[in-house]
Length: 264
Image 1 (cartoon, rainbow, N blue to C red):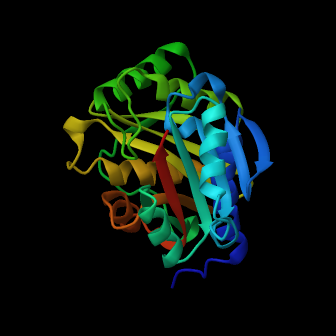
Image 2: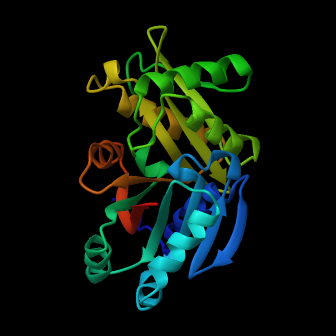
């Protein structure tokens, strides 16, 4: 029987999400949360984020959303984007009434000793991105994806450069996924003590639906376990393909957050 997921392990996943946005960014405590921004990437929505927002407190203030919009506008962002980490259904409905795009993301966790190692015949190989050539291959892969799973525009390769800032900060490492000598995808891994976090998994469009996702995820789990991790987690859109994929790899939903996005 799988081990019970503890409050501390749930907190580790939430903190890892915040640390991703903090990594390499300017950070300021403001407006019921933490604002993280990278000025040179303000054309993509991931670069300016207000995270760890208590929806009960923030949305009780009539002018909160107006202040958030003004703040993001001053930073030159194209959108205002924030995460409610404490919320209820009324907060979701209120955001929708204001015309925001609202999605629910599930934080999913599992213990690596329960999940075990990858057990796939000819599962492929994860290769660490540690030089300019490998980074250029990742950039090309993203360009061919055009739009990422969470809506980020990939055509110009800027998101790959944004992710590299996160790698250069020491937060995470990125990998290319090969199978039968073909580059099929990419994924990143963050290690914080015994906690491991999967971040930004992408499969090339022509290889989707062919079973590449599960060996990629379990291969990353094996790498995490070899590097001393005991708990493995990630986020997935509620009810989406990624939730089904991670569930098939032994991860269980344990927390949730709401993403709100508005145009400036």
